[in-house]
Amino acid sequence: MEPYLLLSQRQDVSHGTILSPYAYYHCIMPAVLPDVLLHWHVEAEITMVLEGSAIYKIGEETFQSQKGDIIFVAPNTLHSVHPLPGITHISDTLVFHLDMLGYSLMDQYSLTYLHPIYNGFLRPFSHMNQNHPFYPEFSECINQIFLCVKNKNNYFEMVLKEKLHHFFYLLFQHQCFSNMDATIPMPAHIHKVKKALRYIQENYQKSISICELADLCHFSKTHFMSFFKQSVGITCVEYMIQHRLKVAANLLRATGLSISDIAFESGFHNLSNFNRKFKSYYHITPLEYRRQHIV
Image 1 (cartoon, rainbow, N blue to C red):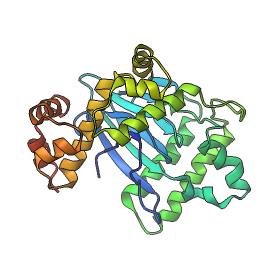
Image 2 (cartoon, rainbow, N blue to C red):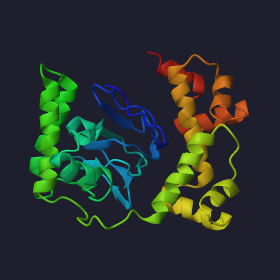
Image 3 (cartoon, rainbow, N blue to C red):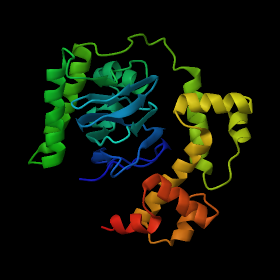
Image 4 (spheres, rainbow, N blue to C red):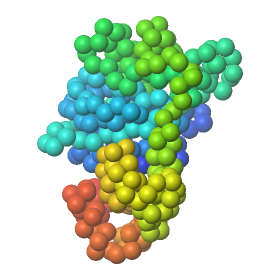
């Protein structure tokens, strides 16, 4: 099982392959992963909380997860996960593209059920706890989904598709949506948040000023800083540092580049500052991190 290692902002990382457009992640937070920064991707995401608790932000909603919670993130939805002090959060997550269920076919099924969710016209529940009246049906379905991807028995691909179809059937059968009005647009500030995050993602190797980001969103510097912290949960400067550190962690795991080259590639132009920030965030040095993640 792999740790849940998500990038930030819009994810261009591939979750799975063209032939198998899904990926399974086992997340242990903060022991393996300090947190998951605010980001979005074109895939949908189903999570089952196995132990502990964490703070989730999904779209406009912020909540504290509990053991047994079912969490659903619709495609293109901003979301993040942050640990609580002294609490280990363990979860299973399946990230999958709606193409697995025929999104690209443009038949009646796809147009009626999948496209409204993908495009944000229907907003499914973000989380469901064990007290919810429909929880037993959903939890049984999701437990079977994770059994499929963990065990990979003969013909598991057919069973996995069947269970994912059943999950969406349950969504519509029980009308588990926050709204059923296709005329409700996405809040304007969501577009501005995504614009700022995308700019950081594309320019993290360079020095990025708050004024640049404020101008991008057509805000004053003061208003932008307040807007960003309210939307994302941390300051813009903290966010840029954490994004660069996550890029560095990915390079430490996936490449043989020197520590100084990784510091430069991830946007740090001072090695001692990089080492200090990395240890503060991951609680170990970059070299120790690399040694722990050698396959």
